[in-house]
Length: 275
Image 1 (tube, rainbow, N blue to C red):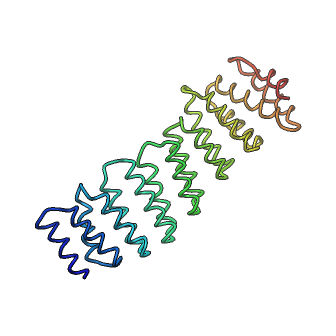
Image 2: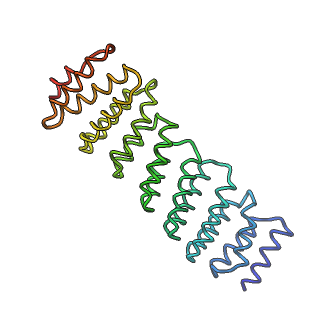
C-alpha cells in the first residue's frame, strides 16, 4: 500500500509538477507508517520547494520526533537554520538544534555552541537573551552563559540592565555582575544614570545590596573620568548607608568624593536621607 502511495506522490511531483499534491500523499503515508523511508525521502525533496517547504519541514520534524530519532531530527533543524532567509526563523531553528543536542542527545558542549550561535544570529533583544538563558539553564551552562552575556553586554551596553536582570534571576551574582557593570560603564554617554538606577533597583529587589556595594566600589576604583568616579562613589555611599552598620563606610566614600576636584557632591545628603 505504501509503495503505491509513494508512486502516486512521485507522479504528482515529477510528471505533473504538483508538489502540494505530492505532500498530501506523503503526509497520508506517514499517518499509516511513520518509518516509511519513501515518504521521508519525498519530504526531504520538498524541503527545497518554496510553496510547501514550511509544511514539509514541519511534517518531517514531527515524525522524527515521534519516532525518537533525535540525531536525524537535529540534522533537519540544521538544514532549516541554514536554508531560511528570515533571521528570526533561523534563530528559532538554531535554538531547536541546541535543545536536541543538549537535552535529547546529552551532548552539552555541542548544545552550548549551538545556543550561542542562536543568540548571536540576530541583534540581541531582551526576548532573545531570555530565550538563550532558558535554553542554557537545562544544560548546566552557567559559565558559558555568563561568558556570552558579557560579550553581548560589551557590544550592546544598552542591554546591560536586562543582562543584570537575567543574571540575578538565574543566580549569577558577584563575579558575573561585576563584568556586566563594566559593560554598563561603556554606556555612560547614553544613559549611565538609567543603568545605575536599574542596577540598584535590581540588586535591592534581590536583597543583595552588599554585592552591589562591592561592584560599585570596584567600578569606582577603575573609573577613568572624575565625574564618573564621583557618581559611582555617591551610589556606593547611598548603598552603604542603607546597610546595617554601614554609615561609617558611607562616610569613607563621601570623603573620597570630597577629594575629587569636580562634580556636584551629593554624598553627604545621601547619608542623612538614607542613613
